Image (cartoon, rainbow, N blue to C red):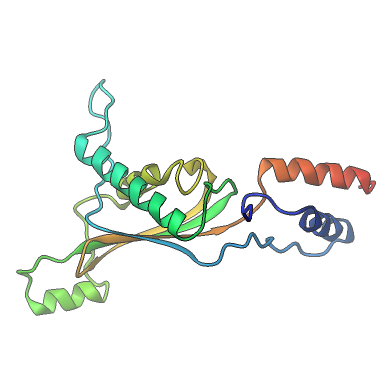
Length: 185
């Protein structure tokens, strides 16, 4: 089984050598190509707490549980048998279904991103998506250091989640520190 969460010793030495020689450091390869998870269904926005009581409404809990279940099945189908532990950048595209009764001119505007969904905040939908994938795709959503999201009208409700690894984990930085010390740097 390939461990996508840990760089090899050789990769860390290569990074150390780049640092010592003052060369540019490229992001190390982790053996993950084009991770794209697609969820088909309506995206439910994370609601903010009202008043003094903090709770997550049933519709949001159900959505997050469904995302978790489908993401888990996707991960296993694609051969990923552990959650990812490294820092990442994420891209999320949320599709909101256009009303069927819209005239054709309005649908044309929507498909060309000239008319955009505004009923629910994109960031509240993104938070529900992130919470649904916690402990399944990644250990914690704090690993996402760069996120870009957009919400557009399309023919069906769905979202896609893409990510790329960036940076090093704390364990890798600790190992790199030992390598640098051994090299006298």
